[in-house]
Image (cartoon, rainbow, N blue to C red; front, side, top):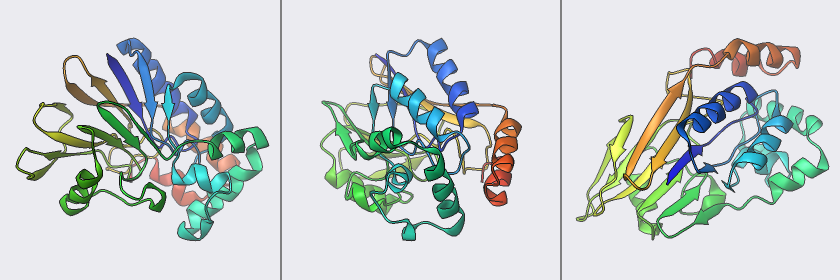
Length: 242
């Protein structure tokens, strides 16, 4: 089965449409979304509606819960809070109810999906080091876990002896005697010094994972953000993927 995996869309409709178009070309049979449909970007409602129409599994991100009122905004920086407050002026009660109803984690026979970390998903931990990944693996029962949240694509690998390595490769073969925590990066707010949108492709039959980067019309998103007077720093960072 071919599965498309997206995360951290953040109201960026142009990036989302680019990704969805590519996934259709790849012939994916399912789409998995790892949360943060909203926040930062200028098209929160359209992005929520598009994901709920196309994704088979959607988990909650911290911005989704902040916009829907489930968590307090004190944990966000000033620019993120300003964007969340603006997003709340755009969303309807129906959209907020949709965001509030998203689960924190989804697990199947071979896969776990969570926005931040498999341990304490409600605490929104970042998985950026081998030590943090080790704690994540200790909570996993499945061989593969897909995460987002940091906006930085990374692959952590645990071998049969419990040794953990970290990879930044664009593609990897998933071996049966190893476990994986895979960060698929961000669709709408890349932060790995690459401004292109980012998505994952998981072929369960071939046991292959590929990270795909695609250019999209960043300037269109920036024009919208400027029109809505969203924070300048959030607008500018899209040009550089930072």
